[in-house]
Length: 541
Image (cartoon, rainbow, N blue to C red):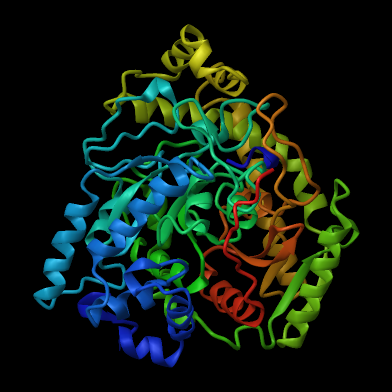
């Protein structure tokens, strides 16, 4: 939670991977020319390579999954553990090279499972993996928790042939521990840094996934979101982030906050890469009843919706308050960037309408927090009771943290854990009332879309990254647009729209439930028209 927000057989969409590359994805020629200029071989520099570029190189023998995996592992050593010391990877998979070797063997035999075959992926450390790695949500209280089996989406990830490279650090318990937390810090993993300016916060709670993917420590990363934890770190780390409709991806095997709002989602350097990952991890899971809502509403391959003309004729509602600096009075340079972006959208065929959404959502946020506390208590009890963690309840987590304050709580405490533990059952009147009020956000958004005949609602995803402050915690930088879609359980895509003082800013597209195809077309068209993604330069604070 962002605390500031309270290919089967080598084909893709019926085309071979080389055909996709030649027909709709920019070739890797520019990257190859850059490598030659720098005296590098293909294996020596994979920075910014996309999934389809990697697949092309693996198919023609210039790369292998083993060489790609080795490159990422070495880079993790060089810049995550030393050098800039991003501290984004909490644990590396000791079996990663063996997995890559077996997938290379399959490719030699003519078997390519999907576009993800041999592609290294990092996952957030609140997602179960039935292997040698722990699942702890960054908490020392859960250290030693080795899951008995993969989370549903990790099973799907392995099925698609991806290499599970390791796990990323996060804001402890997905930033549902303290109202004074510093995003990207956990007692087990320490503080993750923003790769653009190292003294800046990578945002949370998917801080490690955001920092690692942006710094080219993996091809793809998976984050989770309750309220902003995919889109916010994607925005401040210069990434594309997709928060799917709740129920599009399963949540079973993920340490929970809220059954109503939780979802995992892709974090990547391009819209295409994020959409490829989105496609392969959808599916109905008997262990997560929310996925039943997706029946008949999903697509086996969302890349078919990538459309360079995806903005033509689209009606977009622009959050009006952002044009005046947001509800909290944000940086005027962000406002100027937004206005430039609006002109680009219009030049690419979009019709813009100013709308007011945040002022109608804000009165619901106290109810949202109440609902989350109840659902967290219920969900964490169920998870811990069936886990291999040394603690079996929320009460035991709280007790552990008190007994080990010097290491578990050296900066901020656990007021959210305590207040959640004091809540009653989901049968309580307070919970039911809070749930009804919080989820009324769905009707507010749907009404706004219908009354204005909109295809999506848009705005600044997040303000500029705040400074890392372990003593006082996070502070508001004036813009945030994650809560409406999060509270409603609706899809939300953020795409880089530019930089201010070397810090990236994201632009959001969100809509009603299961409107991913439409949003993908618009997000892709915007990305292709702007190309604002920039490689981080690790500027010291």
